Image (cartoon, rainbow, N blue to C red):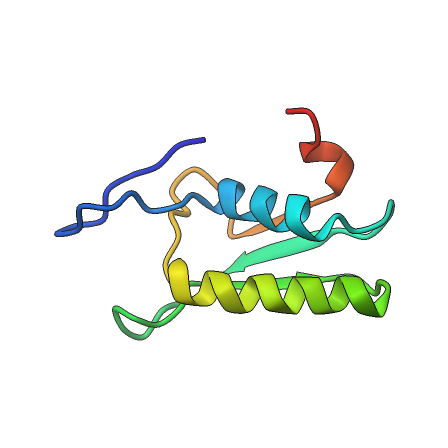
Amino acid sequence: MTSVLPEGKGLAMKTAEAMLKELLLHVRPPRGCAIVLTERESSGPKNLNWVASAGITAPHLADLFAEKVAELRKTDPKIDWSDSPRRLARWLSEVEDH
């Protein structure tokens, strides 16, 4: 898991891969349901540079996903996309035990 220091900050910025893994391990979507993280243009220093989405899943998992995304929007409004494509899609099986 790679992190970089944003200019003028003392805290490490989470990578896109790390955020996607965190979402997958928290939500634990069923087989065949991916979570997608997409880079977006940020219009200011406090605006998000990412959007997360998930496939259709059980209501309790959709709630877990929404709650985790809301938390990450506050803690990590910006993530490091330098080593990732503009869109990442992963299944839980791709990040478990890695």
